[in-house]
Amino acid sequence: MFVIYMDNAATTVTSPEVVDEMLKYFQILYANPSSSYEFAGESRKAVEHARKVIADTIHAKPEEIFFTSGGTESDNWALRSVAKACKGKGKHIITSKIEHHAILNTVKNLEDLGYRISYIDVDEKGVIKLQQLIDTIDRETILISIMTANNEVGMIQPVREIGKIAKKYGIIFHTDAVQYYGHLPMNVKELGIHMLSVSAHKFNGPKGIGFLYIDESLDKVPMILGGGQEKGMRSGTENVPSIVGMARAAEIAHENILKKAENLAKKRDYFIRRVLHEIPFTRLNGARNARLPGNLNFCFQFMSASELLAILDLEGICASSGSACSSGSSSPSHVLTAMGIEDEMAYSSVRFTISEENSYEDIDYVIEKLKIILKEKRKDNRIYRYYNGDN
Ligand SMILES: *Cc1c(COP(=O)(O)O)cnc(C)c1O
Image 1: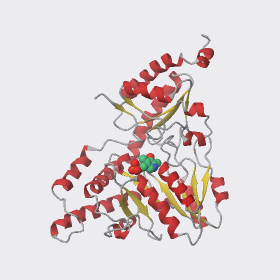
Image 2 (image 1 turned 45 degrees about the horizontal axis):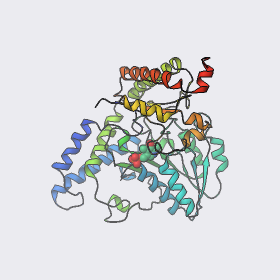
Image 3 (image 1 turned 60 degrees about the vertical axis):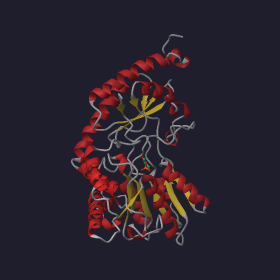
Image 4 (image 1 turned 90 degrees about the horizontal axis):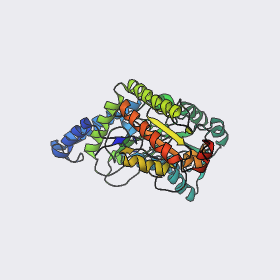
């Protein structure tokens, strides 16, 4: 099948090296790490090695890394754990309007359970308002959960500043780093992050595996009860092949991570420059700087995003309108809405998330297709015809 895949924020290809590494733990070293014979020692060693590899990538301790089924579970766990462990101190949680639904739907549930939730606004570029965050803190605030970088517009949030604020007021700081981790380096201790959610399939690891970093000083509440794996915090037989695969993907991702990010950002900027210069009535959603290296989010005025995506799909081009979870829904993206973008513009917005695998030729190909499609389809739009003088 001919495919130009530009939806890497939805998921990424699993690297062949990662699959290779995993195969051994399906077929040869398949013992349950909890078993007591020597053969199981190999599985245990593999899991603990993976924990160490991952801890090193964020400058944490291995004891602070807990394996989960992915970003959604890590987000659910982080919020519920703090909510339960700290409810004696207060029931106020601060998050933002641009979080992933793994956060938004969890805080909504906590709200039903009697917690008070504040949603911080973002500016027109998609960056959260720090002063509002400070002003929202009160004596009951137990948790700030703000994502490291947004999945739709790729805006990197002022995590360092949030970490400082959280420290000053003695509040726990959780960040959903699913889009950021593995693409740019991070040091949780330096940034003042107490909890961090990661998912392997967003950085060329397997699907259905991730981790939650929990600072050792925090009180924890288990996510899943059972046989006591993960120090009793997240029971269930360890997914050894996936854990090993995630660690391998993390290792690969962190080799020359800045150089790779720089190269990808160059491709992104080339893509942005050409689209804005060569396609009229087009805007970039979000700022050009402080943006994830692989993210582009354009508003093509006078064109419906769903129609554009359907035509691109026929051409083998995979892109998306915001998040994979909301692409089937009929309401505009909550992220674009929070940025003050009118519904009509939001409905015309398309996200491309590129990776190392995309060549400059791929980008050229997509741009040529975009030009042809938009030229043809926009003619159907009365207002477009008016602006172009051919009424
Ligand atoms: C993909 C994503 C998630 C969910 O991760 P899964 O591993 O797919 O459950 C959470 N947050 C953000 C920002 C994401 O992009």
